[in-house]
Image (cartoon, rainbow, N blue to C red; front, top):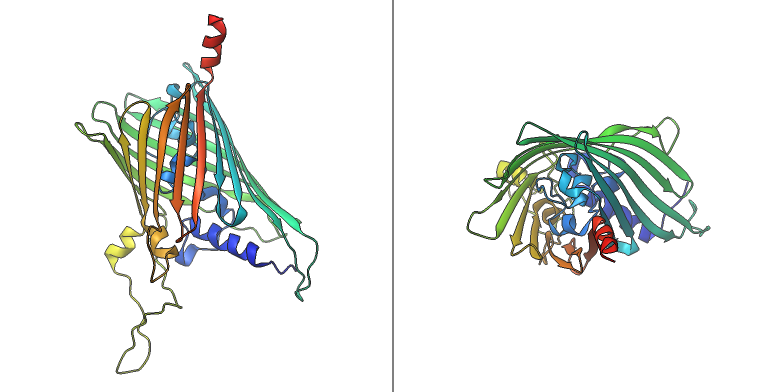
Length: 354
């Protein structure tokens, strides 16, 4: 039995927190990395952006219903400098066939770096490494004019020291999109699957199932496009009462601590993420995000500052589309995310001119 050091504990806490699986379901499901921010645009949006149909193939990693012919022969790469020395990367490619639909191939990995091992008595042992991988293929198509659907299959491989596990999972998505009104509504079921090989024989664990609903609307005479995403709808109460809270209320009659009750509006808000995109032009946009659950769960009592907020920039340069995103998980602990998107057809055009 290994006794992990502080770095590994810090990593584990943030992974469980970022997974959007708190309270009763927090820490009870494996592969929480599946819900981490895989691209700069998703990070800037607050962790989820499942309603936008454009040529950004990184969005289809979460919701395959967003796959469309605008993504034909597009490729994307992302690098994320996460917390506690964690590094993450994402790569994707999409191809459209008029007679079949749009296909994608993606890979997302998380490298936790080198971790010092300890035995059960606290004596140091050899350092070890830990990585998680998700290999994904996706398919998207349309039904009639305004309805779109898609499916992603994820093959999950995890190696934590000497413990190896694999699994398979599906993302199932459907979206209604009205191009004229610039309105969309979507339903997504993420990480619906089963563990093939558990970390320990005979101990299969549940995957981090996440059912989401989202709407998006672009204002007619305004550059603002807003999105509201409801996550973890499979569980009503995802609130968490902190037993170590400093400001506690004492019942004067019993002299005992009063149990904090979470009101219904608060429980509803815990499910919601808010995103605003300022679409100034085809070459430059800004993104703002607010993750209410992240702010409530991760910010300290006395100094919340910008915990739960995120922002980013998207701009075109030399026929590449660059995105920078930053998300705040704790005061002084932001994440930095970089993505680039390229239409590979541009190389053919350049070559034909020469």
